[in-house]
Amino acid sequence: MKTMILAAASAVLLLGACSTTEQRVLKPEELTSIKHVCIIQNAKVRPHDLDRALSKALAKRGIGSTIVTADNRGKLYDSSCPYNLRYKTKGNNEILRKGVFVLRSTKYAVSTVSYSLNDENHFRTNPDLVKQAEGVVAKLLEKNSKRPLQNSPKSPKFPSRHLGDFS
Image (cartoon, rainbow, N blue to C red; front, top):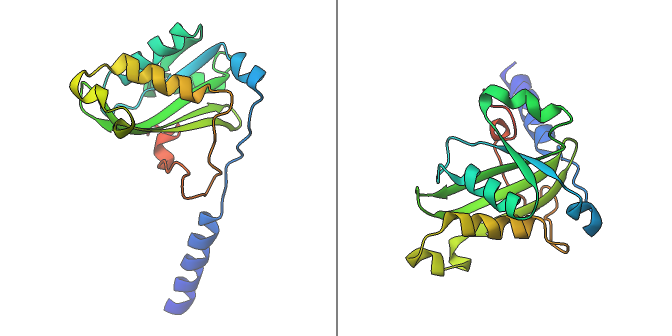
């Protein structure tokens, strides 16, 4: 009996690891046609003001944004949020040290960017969260940005609760 339960549990675990998420590459003109992005606030990460810095960076490129909290996450599924930005980061209240950012439509991933402060050492002495956010947004919207394939070693590993389930 124990062997059968162990075998069933192993099968479920193996099948669960095989699931994938569709990821499409948008054409450059489609990336430039993005007019509004909903930023999913992640209260568990630092810097805490990153959502506002990302909003300013998007505005600088002429893209409107709405910060979506756990209270209004239903907004992600209506027509006012055709794209959303999810992130998982580490840092302190002044600086972003590392992070993974995913720009998604309601159906598929559009662009993924990994960020490391090691690539921009000048922010260590002159912290500027808004400028860091501007760099992240520029990379997300870059015409020829490389997007890792799902389940590849460079694929972002978000826990499922961060990808929209705020419970």
